[in-house]
Image (cartoon, rainbow, N blue to C red; front, side, top):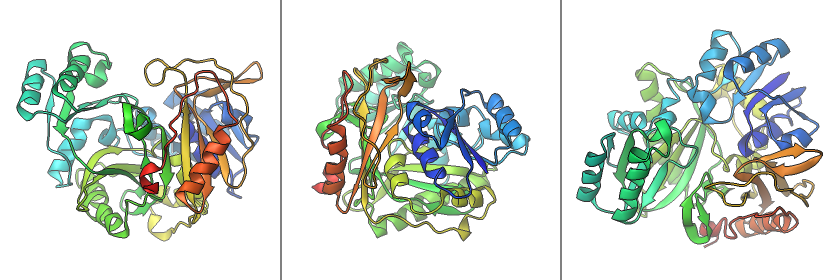
Length: 421
């Protein structure tokens, strides 16, 4: 069978890498793909990103299943377009993807269905937003309502930071339409975890737990990013918290979407804040796998992903069980010079080691140019190490990183520190 993976990042490389391992698969197309997917003989890059053009391609090539990686095509309705043509695709419809594409939609949904989340209010009026922040004080969280490629959340530790974030979004329009409305919510203390499941409309299949590192610099300092590294499993998600997340967040979300007339299918990612007393609140929903969480999760998945997605598309997820590598997988993101603000493109990348059983490189912002691998995005690649302990997996990842070079390369030296501590 032929499979199409939509996207160009590290998440899509990891999904395509895993799907290509299935004995049932003849070709995995990646649209548009990156330098890493271009170099893999089992994968084939397709220079397309428009949803209608991708549907044309899937029809013409007889693609049996399409898997959508990023949020932008989901928000644009790629699933609606494919389904209208009777093409099998795994992902939420445009309507269901509002759980991610509109923070206000998600917060109102959670309030309506009694899903635990932070107290909030939504504003498009500048003065009212500033007044609300003065009334509430800091720390406080400001979120752009729309999709902002991981740059739409400011955790303001002071009132000055909070007011500056409001001005940046509402007055200066730095995030365009995404920041024309803002959601301001209470700051939650605790430890974050990424809880990702497959959903077929009714049934849910949980993936391995993971924890992301959002801040650019060691010890969670510096600006928020799309994610600088992740590891799986996440020790903070104990069996009790796992059960609680399914019971209090995931199942009420799936049932709530169904009762609202917008059944949810696809990957569902709940960003959870776990308080010291074990109580959980939902920080956000993503309608896709996380990046960089996908990379360590796929590195640990032993089962055939094609089989699981096939069952998901057919509404039979309750018939699937997944088997996991018992080892810890830890991924470290290598970012381009001046990421996240204005990442530089075109730096030549050298020294990328060949993959082994305990070390895998997933590409993101890379491309082949005149036969050379060069940077072409903010997050360039994610290096995953696998070992019996978090510290061992961390060591494997950094061993590989020591061989890689490109000008301006930046990365955190402490991925996994919470689990090690």
